[in-house]
Length: 463
Image 1 (cartoon, helix red, strand yellow):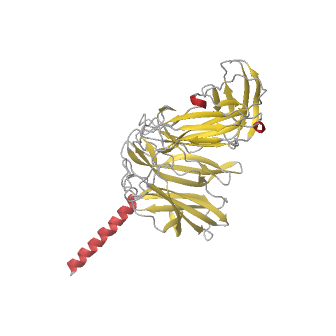
Image 2 (cartoon, rainbow, N blue to C red):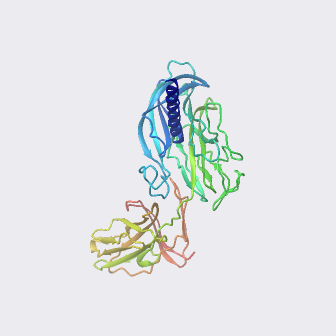
Image 3 (spheres, rainbow, N blue to C red):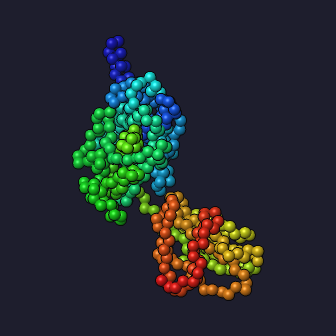
């Protein structure tokens, strides 16, 4: 009887150990943020990133509140949402989260937990909120596989503040031998200064994870020019492993398959009596998985009637037919065409589910359609296999009066027209060159077709 009990106990221990192992193998990263609710109360948000090959997230998770390394109390955060964040910026058409039988083996979810904690009963100014689990993803290839997972946030309650908030999901999957810029920027609700730093992944408050040499927290994968992580980043030669300390963007080109933990620490600094003081800190601890990606190419889209022209002058009461050609260099793919326009009474149609569909525009404007500014047609060609790949073209259709003397016109190419910086939040510069004397009309429109400004409207010489 004792032997049977001993066997059952061993089986139970083994089963419990397997559960912990499965749970541990599913953790791909995490981050903690906090929001001051007034007084000494804080709304805490924990994001935990799980591999879909692991167990499902639990309904609640305990977090510790510490002063330095001393634990003061614990509180629970509760699961609010779960979202598939696999290749949010990539070209895969599915993920391992789609179903248990998905052909895509990789998949990750962001699981968001929230809860409220009060530190009113403590007299300290500085606190750390920490989340820990039994171990990291067991599939990590360059060290720290199966080691404890630990992520934290630091705040100073004596300086009323809320943490920075990440602007984007982390990009977990990257393509081998591709120049990568991973966005990890955050917005600070208090307007404090933020500094982004590469930091070590931790097993607990005092112990960093160990790496397989020669890899380290600032050399977390095999990149172009490895192990010289300070080598020059100058695409298409993308050497080194860099972080922009002003916005948290990581720059690198991973050269081989790997799974690695990477930690971005955001320090929050405030000017107090003329001196900058660190009053907060959050950490994003996340895996970067390098894979061989399929080779996708963006579709092509011609201008008017198969040319590079984007501008056409037409007359009222005359039927006009315009054709645009599209194609996809990947022969197994198809193209979808979509459009918006402010033209009235037009007929626009396109072929569907073809490698090189045509778009047809038919319009017979009347005299009431005559106007000085052009009608706009925005056309987008999307790759059906990779929705992130698309080509957009804007057509300008002028309806001139019948007694207007015809003027020979031409459109300049993208090589002859430069806009920088692009994209831009505020100011930008437009430069262009002409290969012949011409009357130049340069107008700016918003995406709804509303004219914002006329920048140039005059004859100009070649050059």
